[in-house]
Amino acid sequence: MEDLLKVEDLRTYFFTEAGVVKAVDGISLDVRKGESHGLVGESGSGKSVTALSVMRIVPKPGKIVGGKISFDGTDLLTLKEDDMRRVRGSKIAMVFQDPISSLDPLYTVGKQLIEAIRANNETVSKEQARDMAISLLSNVEISEPERRFNQYPHELSGGMKQRIAIARALARTPTLLFADEPTTNLDVTIQAQVLNLMKDLKKNFNMTLVLITHDMGIIAEMTSRVTVVYAGQVSESAETHTLFYHPTHPYTEALLKAVPRLDKRKQLQSVGGNIPNLIDPPTGCRFHPRCPYAIQICKEKVPDYEEVETDHFVACHRWKELSLVGVQ
Amino acid sequence: MSQLTEEQTAPPKRVHRQRSATQWAVAWRRFKRNKSGVAGLAIVIAFVVFAIFGPLFAPYPPRSTESLLQGQAGQPPSWKHPFGTEINGIDVFSDSIWGARNDLWIGVAATAIATLIGLAVGALAGYSRGVIGGILLGIIQFFFVIPTLLLILLFSRVFQVLVYQGFGVNLIVLILGLFGWPGISFVIRGEIFRVRELEFIQAEKALGAGNLRILFRHIVPNVLTPVIVLASLLVAGNILTEVVLFFLGFGPANVATWGELIEEGVQYVSVYPWVALFPGLLVVTLVLGFNLLGDGLADALNPRLRE
Image (cartoon, rainbow over all chains, first blue to last red; front, side, top):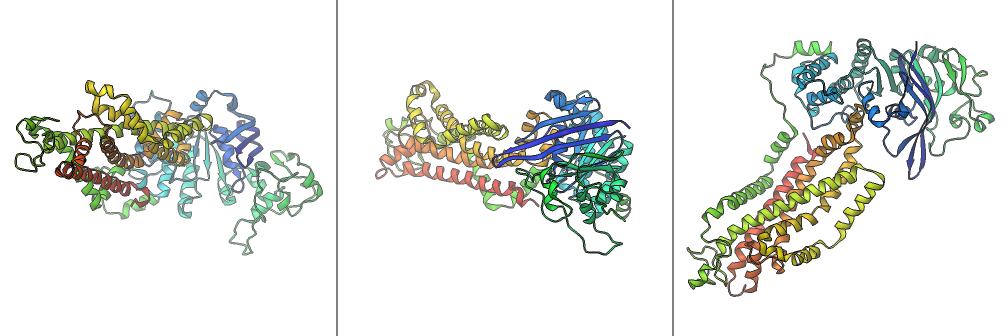
């Protein structure tokens, strides 16, 4: 399959008063047409900033300082802002983490959907947009779409708001959808509904999905390929199945150990330590202060991003010698 | 699945389409429960009606010294002159009515000017970062720290020539409006900082919305509630400033305002105490009304109290 989105050596830094925060520091990513790609890592590892960088809506004082992003053959980083605006929403869309604050409280659901449908596209009449909005609401399995259309966000539940946020992102049938922790703020039962809905929508709308999460369970459930990011860099990338059963990066192993399992009642292992300070990241491999397998070279030299096998890459000095434990 | 079961178990709903309560409707419901706020609104409405229709019933034109010729100067309240007359024979009741019109106009029009300027400057200062934002903040701070009252006094002296061309009241409106906005700007700027970071702004960007659309359709409407409260309080403040201006003798003498009456009244307070008393009571009542209204609005519009 061909690449829909190819991110190479992306660097997005935040120029704060405390120093330069290297939130994304050389992330590479390739997302193929039609796949569900997982982007996994702890909070603050640069997953969301990567997505915001692709859409070029990184909030200030953040700035993309290097790298290349090509989407469907277009170099996004050299596009004029006006042209980039036309890409947003129509080609690439995004669903955000917090459904409560991702809808404007002052407008009805219908108004917000119509605005999304007609953004940069005034050829659609208001009447047409209204019909489209109602059918979007039924697409995201909202009951009584006609009634919801006239309601305000504060009248809806969290799960319903997230469905509406999804509907809004789909308003102009984008080819690529970023879902940034779309279920983190929802109840567990609603989470499953929303994830299933996203699966169906991805198929029906013929979309490519990049799912950003810290939840390995969701990755296993939803994605076919995964990129693991740590402290603004990619540590491992593989097919989901391979990554779960044959991890080659100690960080991947640690993430897998931290997943609760009902079948094995063992003490849950957290990944020791904290994500490093990205103003002054550790030398060498950024994971070395937390890595149980770290040796001298890990502190000194940045590991290369090497090919383990086809479609499986890892950035670790010791991947050849270590035999790491995946899911059994 | 879940929707299906929900619909099956729920009793059939009535079919008529009910319009959802807007945030304004919710706020109005809450405002109605606030007694002092409603009292403030009632006072304000009463004065507005008084200012609009009162002049139809005013016994004398503004600043009319007709009674002086009839030997009626300095009369205490009577049926003919309910609020008495002052030393030049001006009927205090008539001028209080004309004054209500002028004072309300000064309060509201100056507030409108100040609010528009404050909103525009505050919005731009809050939304643009970097150099432009810094410059705008500097401008706001400059106007915030300069002693506004002194400048107002200075300007009303400098431009006094306009007063004799019938520009008296509007001169005050302009001066109060042009100097009254920094407080509003500060609040708007802060509110915009808050709203700008909310996720729906990011979401709008992700949908391809442009900066102006985001600023004026999504950010500004979301910061309007404190502006409404501040504007209501600013009306009261402007009326008080008007009174101070005239009290200090800086107001145009040919304009009927409460401040002018109070100033004249205070000069002869031991002889004709009613001249300052009645307009003074009116000022206090109207300012109280706007303050109660502002407080009531602040409570009703506070999102943290939202049901």
